[in-house]
Amino acid sequence: MTLKLSRAEVQAKYAPIPDPNWTPEVEAEFFARLSKATYRQAVNPDDEKAMLIREFATDILDAKRLNANYISTMAAVLGQFADADTEDTECLIARRNKQLGTPDTIRTIQAQMLSAGLLVKETRSQGHFFVGEVFVYRPRAVYRHRVATSAYLEKLYRVCEGESSTCPVPANIPPEDVPY
Image (cartoon, rainbow, N blue to C red; front, side, top):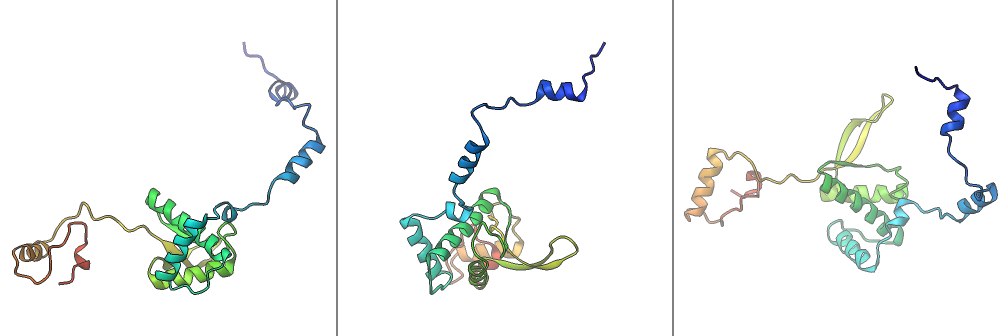
């Protein structure tokens, strides 16, 4: 025979036990002490990482003005790129993502990374029947296990035998990148 409890009995039996020391005043003080930190502020890089980000931005992206907001936003964006690389997925860089930075800074970084070839602009569905362009980062695939065509093997053989002026190509470079 199963004992059936009423709703009030279940609530009384399984309800959490309140802490008598946790008063509304203590709760208000606790939440007042919490900082208003966002993800972007949490990933503020130290001096060495900021120097590397500055070097990357000036050399690869041709950035001219690098303020602290730009460096912080770039650190957050590169952190998302690193997560996408480790998980082998793609990541979207949205302009209105408050966790990355201000929309103006993200727009600048998107334009710089698009011209450098790190981001791709694609048209995708964004929900509620809205279709628009988004900026996508995809990790580059590693060419470890590919099927070689006979023309590619012939070119590689010619290079190894010295019949070509170019040097032998490592196996991890795709055939379309080989300058033949």
